[in-house]
Amino acid sequence: MRSIWVTCALATISAVVLEAQFGGVLDKARRRVEEAKRKAKPVTDRAEKAAATYAAWSPEQEQQIGEATAAKMIAMFGLANSPALAKYVNLVGASVARNASRELPYRFGVLETDIVGAYSLPGGFIFITRSAVEGMENEAQLAGVLAHEIVHAAERHLETEVRGKKTSVWAIEEAKQQVNTNETPEFLRKRAEALVQDLFNTKLSREKEDGADERGVQLAAQAGYHPAGLLEFLKTMEEIQSKPEGQRATNQLLSTHPPFAERVERLRPIVAQAGNQGQTNAPRFLAALK
Ligand SMILES: [Zn+2]
Image (cartoon, rainbow, N blue to C red; front, side, top):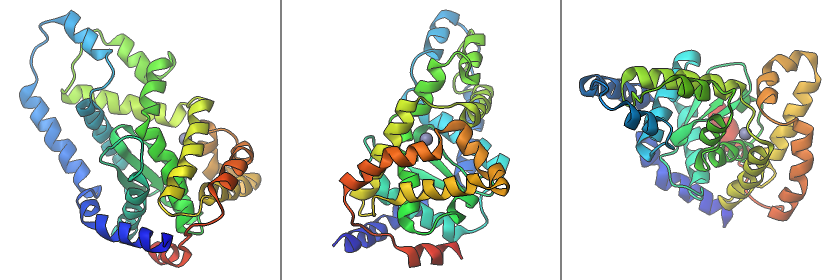
């Protein structure tokens, strides 16, 4: 039953997902920049604009900032040169995101890098690295990692963290900036740069990470996947990290997340509670990796 559910879900969402491929992100970001250039107005009311700068992001701002940041990430790393893998990761991600706590246009991209990582940007832009996918054995593991990132995006973890941390590049930029130049290309470029720096350097609170692990396991299980996917991936990462040759690849993930062993131990009872059944879809996963 679960197997049929997953398969049907993947089939019905494929059309939507195709439109949401990352190929359109750069074009869309460029169009927004052009549009913003035309609309850019001189600053007339500094107080009002400063107040707006410090307000929480509106859904539209969240999308704009997410798009600009996604474009920056793609420019930095490039996307893996495999449309089939990109499509597959989008299908798995979208099936997991169906039960997310907040509806967003979730989009998933595979970054071409040897660094093992997964990143959640505002607005539902989620990246996983090719090296992370290659370290997995099945679809349940991919679903578990994407689910962890979906929780971060749904619950606005990055936004709330960078606003709350005085040391974050975003917070420093915000404090320096006395006027709101929202929607101008300069605003988006600076914000995207600040956010990427925070993304790679900011440790989210332990509460947020534990929450993303716990609710990620539940989200993947709700989509019909075996709940142990994330835990198994973390165990693999722990093994890789224990070898000197594996440390370079996993250090970045460790610098922003709690130690793998602690996450594994914390997840064990949560996974046990979620039940010992669900799809792993190893053959389909391995076929997509080819
Ligand atoms: Zn995380």
